[in-house]
Image (cartoon, rainbow, N blue to C red; front, side, top):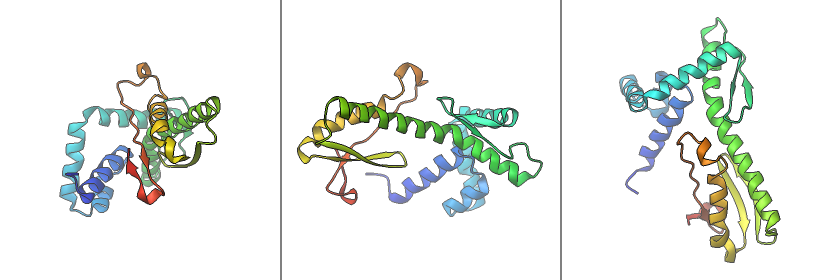
Length: 190
């Protein structure tokens, strides 16, 4: 509650933008700031997360060598143009290469969670009380009987947070948040 909407928006732009290969000029434009301030944010980000710069360089090098990147689960994304002599083509391919392992892994995790949740619903014969309705980016939307929301939310949350076994996570925490409401616009954190 101490963080304003604008602070949160800027943090998301910096975090996701840099992680997915956004350069200083694009960062400046997305933040609506000066080039000097964008460069400062960029420098501070990599000072705070020094291993990230090394990781992103590794991803680009591997993509250039192999022609593809991989998710945590081994799903490949072939990156056309990664060795292009045309700078803007190569830069776009490098951004795609950096984006794919992270976003692709997140998509894989969500799909695996959907499968696990569907198995749980079927095994427990909960079809009358809980129905997986929709996926929106990294969210799953369910229709759940009003009287059962608080009962089922912890199980769904547990499944989503434990798709990858703890021993295989490289100390990366996975967290999910349950919300409920009469409609999507009225959701409240449980």
